[in-house]
Image 1 (cartoon, chains in turn brown, blue):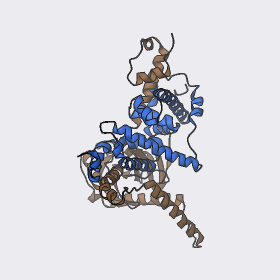
Image 2 (cartoon, chains in turn orange, blue):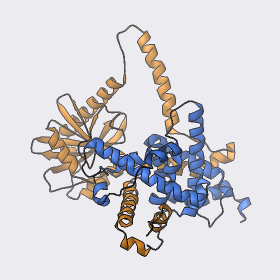
Image 3 (cartoon, chains in turn red, brown):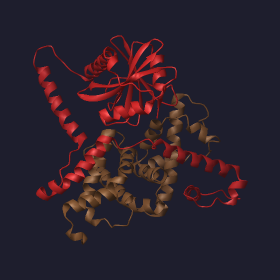
Image 4 (cartoon, each protein chain N blue to C red):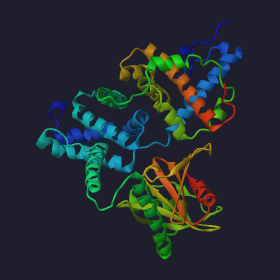
Length: 257
Length: 191
């Protein structure tokens, strides 16, 4: 009795009939189950990966604009963000060299930028607490997410209401010069802001904790506030508050994908 | 109106109708190839730009997604060649990885449960560590669920090569995941 070849397994995964041998051979059955599980897990891993609204808008604008730009120049204009970022970071690096050369005792590095970003998140949280009366409040989490989508162009993951944490509402603020949305929730130890932004945890200087098997959680602490961050759909959801890390992570746990 | 006399506006409209519904698929493929969201967005935008420029060569009624993914692959390969020429580090050679993975024999008996322990990011990160051709082939088969013939057309190889490449990629993906699991102390991944 010869086992199935790799090619036969691939054909079966694409819909070919399963040979009767598989029913009689535990080894081939296990290999098929494993290959099928790997295939399904990979498919599932990409299920939530979607082009951002920003990208969709850029591509649409580019395609729509080609009718005018293309006719006058013969070639559509392309703006590539990473290329621009590289150019900008090159200019920034040049500026940094000049700053170091000037003896004013100033210096900048990635660490200080990350710290500044964390300080900005703490300020954003404080602003949220100071304007609780101005929060958009609704019982239906879909309405909250819809409100943030209308304000920021991105529909965030929804947060559970009626669970261990009470959702006070949502609002928008400025972070790194951009409009970002946040949920404000009340935990047993105080209020927490969950800020939704495209920035990566690395750029915020946060450290990953990979002991949680289902999802990586990044952590930081700044100005008396703790921070915990998870990634959903290429967005960072950063919980900020003067509460223990566990509370922040519990609040993040209420985000539904 | 014959295709050749389309105005630019009509061409843009036809392109929008045919190509834009595939934006998510193209972006996903870019994520699989590039990793960093900003680079994936740039690759996606470059793909649509080139596709629009060459839209006259697209045959209406054929698979637009496969056509876009072929363009994406070509742009990606150009970028890789430039990176290699510039001395940047590139993923491991396919043959070397295949050799490393050749010892993989025993199947996980409870694969579905074991795989649920990984986050989506970890699975995608493991895929990204595969050699370029294996990575794209496995992505197109498992995620985009294209046929072996379509993948062969996109990657410019024979169907048999697609089949063997997919199988090797799957073995290598398992090896990478097992390595993650061991690093994180998960139980049940030692086979």
